[in-house]
Image 1 (cartoon, rainbow, N blue to C red):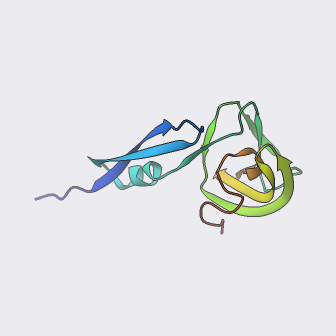
Image 2: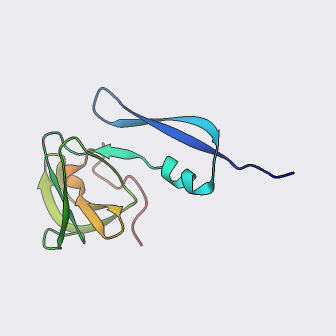
Image 3: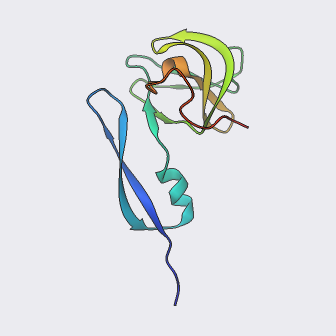
Amino acid sequence: MASEEIVEERARSTAEDGTVVTEASSASSIPSVQAAADAVFYPLAPGYQVNVRSGPSTGSRLVKILPQNTSVAIRCQTRGETVSGPCGTTNIWDNIAPGQYVSDAYVKTGSSDFVTVRCA
């Protein structure tokens, strides 16, 4: 008899304060879905387009620009150049994909500290 792996799938919704909330439900799926389902998405500061850099500094190569009203999944966080933005002044940078960083000063995490694991 073949065994099935049960993973949690999470549905995204937005709370009144603009933060993204996840709701869990059981489903049968493959393990790669688990990692994606566990991602927590954070909204960018309202009204801002945000530069994505190849490293944790404004001097790093510009990779792309995220449009207004975008939410990002933070893979890990690291310290880098200090930046002032609508969400405060910080030296924390959020890694949103391999080789892609945004300053936490433009991401509404609800904290002035790390909200996930540090980048290796």
